[in-house]
Length: 509
Ligand SMILES: Cc1cc2nc3c(=O)[nH]c(=O)nc-3n(C[C@H](O)[C@H](O)[C@H](O)COP(=O)(O)OP(=O)(O)OC[C@H]3O[C@@H](n4cnc5c(N)ncnc54)[C@H](O)[C@@H]3O)c2cc1C
Image 1 (spheres, protein in one colour):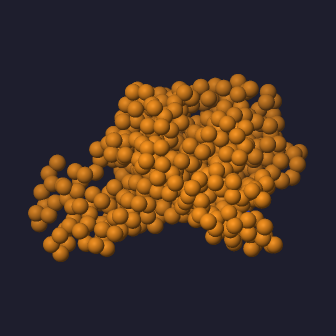
Image 2 (cartoon, helix red, strand yellow; image 1 turned 30 degrees about the vertical axis):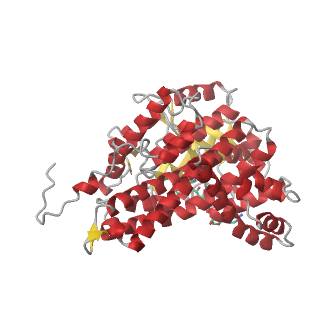
Image 3 (tube, helix red, strand yellow; image 1 turned 135 degrees about the horizontal axis):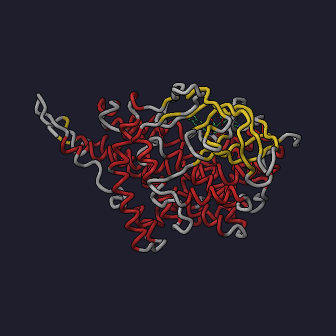
């Protein structure tokens, strides 16, 4: 490539710092994986992921965000058939094929290795791939947990877990309706039984991301069922039925601030055929417990990936760019900004990995009840705190670049910043999730044993006042006083959790 410039000013030294292998460059990631004593094949697999994430996945992630490459709804086809299909650029399809066909969904894969790959994928922002990755994980877990008695679910699990680059399938999840996403018990989309265990789904879903997926998990109100959350079932709906679009119509694609490479549709289901995943009176409970919690784990890991990528790029640029006769990294306040970015990325990464550990422990040891409750509360707080914080982190990194930081084709950070702003909205925004965590603490009897419960997660990082503040929040005379006290305390608790996680990773414990 010709890098010559009319002024003689070139960016080659900065550009040569980008890429490489993000697995090999990440000492904290490798320290975390050391706990799993991975075999050589798995380590090599992750090394390959590190090279792909920093290489072809990175290049495609930049390309698919350009306006001319964004997803679109296909025009009506030539044979007088209604068309309701979304077209993705070939580059997005190729990245999806490589991710889903990589073996990431093998049941026997070590969970840390799986989320290490998720972390590497997310360093490229959403890029039309991260949502698909999260939803596919949630779909597999939901089918495995609630659906294995159904032959159709078993076929889907087989297809998902055995995806290859040539033949891959992926998932999506549609819960939110126009009247609200947080209070999903208000879902109105109708589900009516047909025959042979099949159901027909009719109604509208308001935010349907990754709508080109092969299998959709859809929540719907069961005909004749009770009001409220017990009347909502969870259904698996293939996008195609007997080779044709399965009773649905794309109304439009959302014009979004971020995650632009990801198609998010408003969708009408018009008798789409599906089957229940688990008991139809437990659909919402199962959706939250498995599908949404899995996505929240992806969001937490994504925040860590975004923070790491932004920090790495800021350091690369600050070591190259000169102002007032020296590298900008050598100016004290800019240097301070770089240190803050490194500290923030380290804390976010260590906290995310420790949250994954707590959650995966709760999956294999649900009988370890207190730890399972800690994991449940932790995931809500971690998702809320890290996704609210990460846009500021990316913004600070972007400003290390000055004006070049806002030029879409100069660096990836404007895209990462926009994607970071979306992360909080997924699977419950900040205030909703903090209140869910608070509700869990009240419901599952933490009152009266606040100190021992917090020590379980924070160990010797528990501060003197934490248990007292939690006691005051849980015992507050009225609901809003308790909520406000908890709103102050929760981010402090998570900061201590991150500090503990980082200290343990650095010490090699
Ligand atoms: C780009 C994008 C893609 C999306 N893709 C999907 C998808 O594929 N599938 C899907 O199902 N959904 C999807 N969503 C929807 C997303 O899950 C919802 O936006 C989210 O759940 C919040 O719902 P809402 O937007 O209706 O906000 P509302 O429920 O109206 O909430 C508005 C505000 O009120 C707060 N709030 C609500 N209840 C409480 C409470 N009890 N305590 C404290 N605060 C509360 C919330 O925190 C929020 O700040 C997507 C959203 C975006 C932005």
